Amino acid sequence: MLKGVLTVGGWTMASRTLGFARDMLIAASLGAGPMADAFFVALKLPNLFRRLFGEGAFNAAFVPAFAGTLAVEGPRIARQLAERMASLMTLWLSLLVVAGILTMPWLMTVLAPGFADDPAKFQLAVELTRITFPYLLLICLTALVSGVLNGLDRFAAAAAAPVFFNLLSMAALLVLTPYVATPAHALAWGVTASGAVQLGLVLWASARAGMALHFLRLPSLAPEVRQVLRRMVPGIIGAGVTQLNLAVDVIIASFLPAGAVSYLYYADRVGQLPLGVIGAAVGTAMLPLLSRQVRSGESLSAHRTMNRAMEMSLLLCLPAAAGQAAAAEPIMQVLFQRGAFGLAEANATAAALAAYAIGLPAYVLVKVYAPGFFARGDTATPVKVGLAAVGLNLALNLVLTQWLLHVGVALATAISAWFNAGMLGWLLNRRGQMILDRRLRRRIPRLLLAAALMGASIWTLEGVLFPAPGLLRFLALGLLVGSGIAVYFAAAQLLGAVDLREVRGMLRRRRKAAAAA
Image (cartoon, rainbow, N blue to C red; front, side, top):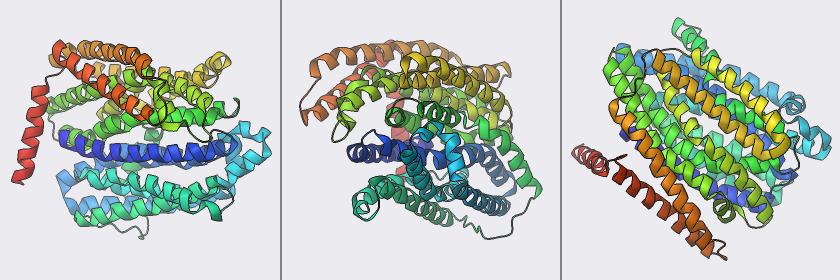
């Protein structure tokens, strides 16, 4: 599992780093005004469907079925299941894309109803979303093939694919802008082109792994396909609660003053870095392993997998949350404050980031807890918890935005994420499917204390290093982050929250195994 986490996390870190470069370019070109708001909504709609139908629900239902079939019935039957799902997904997603393009004005009134008060902004959002909507088909098929690769314990290509999303988006903004109506149009075309490239990459990797897939076959509702679909329907909500909450955020933010959607987007992009590197990496590597352990009746190994996944996640996400909350303003000023994105926009975005950071450990824990249900074929229970979390998020949005505007949106999302994680953890524990071992119970409070000490040190040092002029801001932020990391791991080691010798030993064993192979 550690090897898979490091592979997925490493590529995700590369993708998110390029993503920051892309967002810096977007912020300098589009700022945080009506054009940026329209583009981010155009990107949000296909991404929402991708995370619900592609990565979220599909992975929750398909990866355990594929991994179990591969272990018990062999690669031929597993390939057959994947191809039947691919053919069915190609058909219905193509119909969905065509219907979405034709009905886009109506969809926009649902997704961003506040844009209706500004006809030019509304029309721009419709145009851009029509350009980006085919990305939905391409990226959901990419998610399907990625699920096959994950089931084969081949994580690299699927984790590397999003790198091309950022590279092609930046290339389109730099190259196509003079030839299209606005920079936002150039970005939209880059998004769609990146979907085709990502799909090509994972198909090539799957063929190299001995699992070449053919999509252009007649769809078949075989029993195993129907089982995946039955599990997928509730998984659309259960695995995509965070995305549904973010969709609610966009709807509420569309009624707030101009720039609110952009502030939340930039803050969420920074907040998503540890979620992708830690939460998604752990969840991706953990699901096929846990599915095989549950299918084989290895209950003790399954408990151990859950405990070590939680420990690994908290070890890394707690300092990330403390660092984002304590250094929100320097982070936003260094990353985005240039061109059309001024100090006022940077500070407004920083306030949203600090609120999102409160919920970061909860977002990561949801990624850890969800496989505990999905590996056992239970996609219904997370639905019930997810619906309650979405309802809570909506209620809190309506209340908190009255006083906190866009910061209230971010805070509502964080609170509902803690509710979601708390309920999922409690249910797993009550069923005896997740029992905290002595090591984890001992280390959690020590990790919390180490993260608090780190946050205090960053807050103190921030007053010395900032505001720093010009390019020195990058050096100052690097010193701030580096000192925070040093304080955290030193405190964690002294408090007994982590044994760095144990980590070095695991990495040394991994290097020896790789050399022997």
